[in-house]
Amino acid sequence: IPEIAQYRVSHVTLTINAVDPDIGKGVYRWARDGIRISRGRDAAALLIERQLEAVRRLKEHDIVVKINTVVIPGVNDMHVGTIARTVKELHADIMNCMPVYPAPGSDAEKLSEPSDELMKKVRSTASEFMPQMTHCARCRADAIGLIGEDISEEDREELGRCCTSKGSEAPNVAVASLEGLLINQHLGLADELHIFGPGESGFRLVEKRKTPVRGAGDQRWHALAETLADCRMLLVSFAGDRPRRILADKGIDVVTAEGVIDEALSELFAGREVPSYMTCAAPRGCGSGCGGGGGGCGA
Image (tube, rainbow, N blue to C red; front, side, top):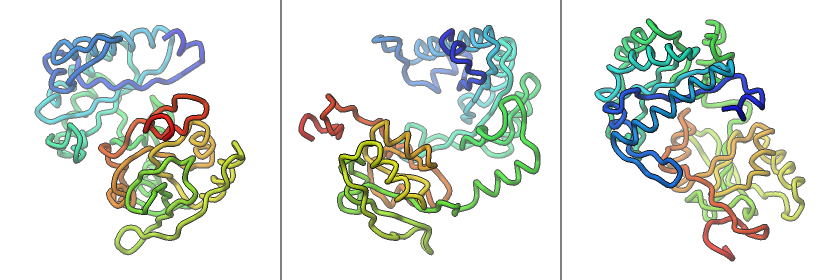
């Protein structure tokens, strides 16, 4: 926490889904403290203790704290008011109750998504203790405006239009693929990218586009950003930190994923995110000359 304050961070978001370990054990399967793994109620108790301590210490440094709570019917929906009361006592600033998303292939796929009626009831209960952020569901819409302040009705309408639009100034998605069926290629090794755009059935292959020549350092990634100026996202099996940052600065989100291209694009062109079961942590290279493909030395 002191390190956060040192860098003049003004706002922090924490996700707290329970403050009672007996309820938390239905939310969290395990927790790790250094090399020690806890499970069940012990895991929930450890995590809750650390989360509440974080709120307390952040407020000691006058940092604005937003609490996200994922509402899971039959697990913690009747507990949200208690969460709100607890974080209020620790002087948290605002709360965002969001519905759980039962993503196929994830641990949550068998959960029930809360109804609009249940979400209204939960937010009403929580609002007795904490101001509610009402313009965010699961999509990071809270990045618009200031934490602690709700957005205007005009901004809310504009946000809705943006969230439901399938097109944008950069409507396409680029994919690094060896054969055009799977997301399975390292960005640094890709000589061409598959470019997909909106189509009658949701999306279509626009073209295959050559990438800039290798060996030019940052210049290659700046050139690639220009090549992908009509793309909002790039799907790859791996990409280094440097190209990620350069492309992000140009508005191109680099997403590390593996799996069937059509499955990812069906979600993206429907206005949703890449399925969580497809996204993956990027492997790390073992040395300065390593391609970082995650397949061992020489990969």
